[in-house]
Length: 105
Image 1: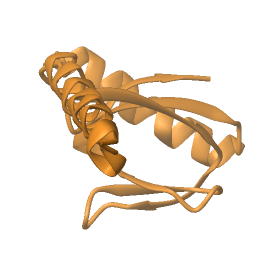
Image 2: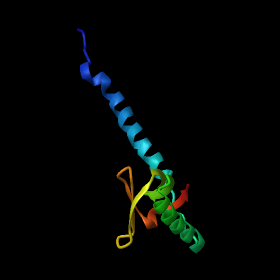
Image 3: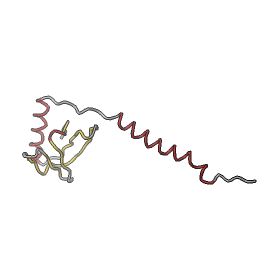
Image 4: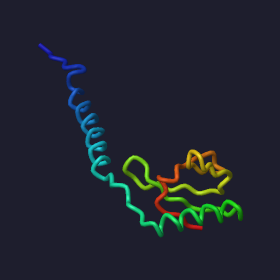
């Protein structure tokens, strides 16, 4: 009598794939950081740099905090909204002032 396991023999590989996804999500959660606290001088420097780069239309690099990670965005500032405290870049992205951690020109 011949016994064919069929699909049953591939079931252990499904558990390996799902555990890989879980492991990746756990490692990603572990690598999250807290938002850096900026001093008054750093905040003033960021505000001055934003205004200067807006009027001079220079390309700037903005490092911002989002969901536990520091991300980077580059572009020219096209609009500064003082009411909602947002800046708009020419690459169709927008950032809140309180997200910004560092700016370089």
